[in-house]
Amino acid sequence: MLKHAVKEGFEVKGSRTNLIFYALTQKHLEYLMGYRGKFLLYLCPMRIDIISVIPELLESPLAHSIMKRARDKGLLEVQVHHLRQWAVNEYGQVDDYQYGGGAGMVMMPEPLANAIEALSKERQYDEIIYMTPDGQDFSQGIANQLSLKENLLIICGHYKGIDQRIRDHFVTKEISIGNYVLSGGELAAAVVVDAVGRLLPGVLNNETSALFDSFQDNLLAPPVYTRPAEFRGWKVPDILLSGDLKKIDEWRYEQAVQRTAERKPDLLKD
Ligand code: 6GU
Image (cartoon, rainbow, N blue to C red; front, side, top):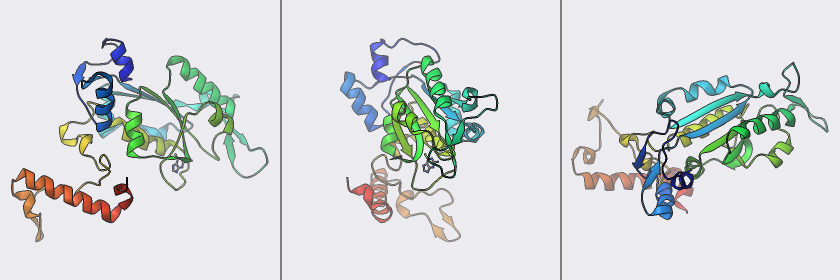
């Protein structure tokens, strides 16, 4: 996306707003420094297309709060496509029994291939992602990488999953959101879109900047407090009321390290 923007000489097109000087995450910074030695970032909306048999499942998670803001600002375009548009017959069939026998239906290759090909005519996808419990575990690192892309296509599976040939010949990335089974890929896709969408430059304001998120430095966030300073006799740590910003930063960092060591020691390893 950025390379493309720089090559195009920052031409302003479509709903893209303007050029800004901005570096969102360390990853963006490295990428930009590597490219031009400047923190130039073209505000280019990310486009995410999602193929689903239950589009309703994706509506609400992407229609509120930060995702709503991202979409309203034109920074993120999400379009959900009903797989039945590409069904093989008038009954809207998109799944069938599995070869070799066994319980559960499999999503047929033809509707998926037709859907992917039809959508690929409109734009070139940087990744075609299949949401599946046997995919790569989703992480902040993957979210950061995806946030640098321009066009993503996400396929949500159902039933026993999709025909292996689609995975072999179209899918470029397979993502799982954890070691448990969901009834379909939609909720997992919503997780990915949310985690990626909030990283797009301009989506978060300064107070909520993604730079300070848990996981961005492989550290969990420190404890947070708000008013009142004393609630039912439980006090906010004195240091946070001291006004000494340097000491507060140190305290937060120590707390973050301690929390990470206690709760997710694996994060401290690499
Ligand atoms: Cl991506 N899909 C489904 N169906 N179940 C999951 C998952 C995805 N990630 C964890 N469990």
